[in-house]
Every structure is written in structure tokens, then in C-alpha cells.
Length: 158
Image (cartoon, rainbow, N blue to C red; front, side):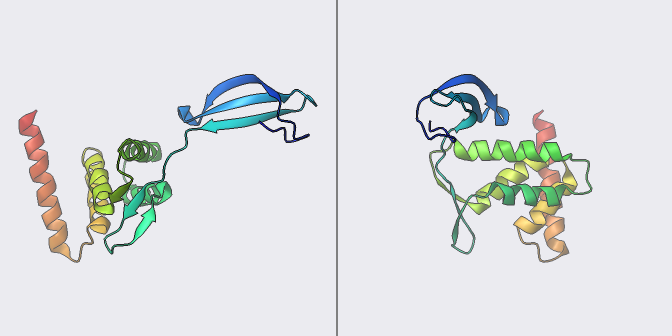
């Protein structure tokens, strides 16, 4: 690792600890040439995922876009912001663990709805209205009927 002060490449690690909730390692280093101390971070390099949009366009997966959509859906509900963050982390982890680097936006939308189903009916309908592009009240009614029938099926299974 190159020293930011003298550009020497010899340094020693003084301390290592987990950072970013275990997603990276923070290392305190000391240059063997000038004794300058500095911090480095080590992260796993991930291959970017591509999202295939409805219109055929492709774009790089954007975690913030997913977070913003979920946050909007959960506004003024009992869902706390840290729960939204947890959902996004889980979804991103599920997507990263796949061998496929290209994913349909519709698949991501269904994954989000599956998470919201057990958390908040209001957030579920809000997200579905944008994701499924509702055009009228019939779309809302149809979604609510589907939601209630799936909820009933879960109750009979349990």
C-alpha cells in the first residue's frame, strides 16, 4: 500500500477491524519510511448487476433508486426507516448471490412486494400502484383482492 505522505510502498498494519456492518475491513497502517499513519479500507469487489427495464433499456442496478421507491411507499406508515434499509440490504444480497448478472425490473418489483406483504398493506398497495402502473380504481381493487386471497391462503397453511 502506497503511503499518502511519501509514496513509499512499505507499510505495516497496526490494527484491523470490521467496518460497514461487516462489508469491509478498516486497517490502520504506518509507513515504514516516514512513520506516517493512515487508514485503508478493503472491500469485496462485486460485478455490477444490470437491470432490464420494461422498455427494453438496460441500466446498472442502483441501490438508492430502490431505497427511494421503498421509502416513498412507506411514508406515513408504521414502517420505520431502518426496516426499509434492512429490506433493501436483503434484496441487494439476494441479487448479488445469484449467478445471473442481468435481472428484469419486474422480478425486483415482485421481490419488493413479497417483503412488503407481511409488513404493511398500505406500503404494499402504494408500491404496487407505481410498479404495476395502475390506471384506475379497478387496478387497486384487483390488487387488494389478490392481497386478501394470498393472505387467506397463508392463514390456512399455518
